[in-house]
Amino acid sequence: MLKSEGKSRAEYNQIANYAYTQDAINIKVGSKSPHIYFADVVAQCNGGPLKYGSIDSQAQLDENLLANCLPTSAVSMSTAEFSDFLRQRRKLMAEKIKAYYFAL
Image (cartoon, rainbow, N blue to C red; front, side, top):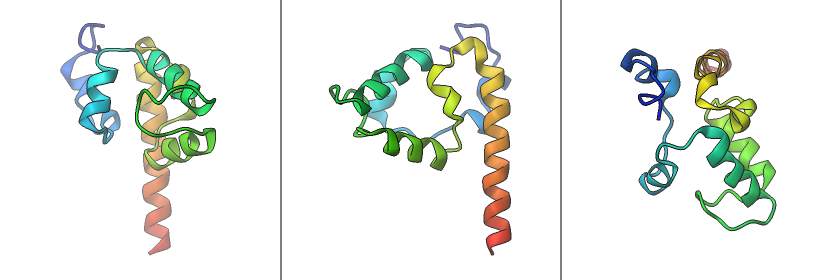
């Protein structure tokens, strides 16, 4: 999706864009914009059918976003907001690393 939106390889092939996703989920997401597939995940949290994984509550979704350093705003972002997503995620990743470091 990012490539077809004109994003360069340097933009989408960076650590702030990587997240572990099961192959089956990654295939289902395909080239959908985040606000499209996250709408289905939010629906799952509100009793809808499980389409992407097993997250079925807002608490689980929030926990997953936090664990993966994904900004909560990602659920409503489009690919046009990719630069904002990367900026926010880099900050969350740095905060997580800092907290871990000081916990040693």
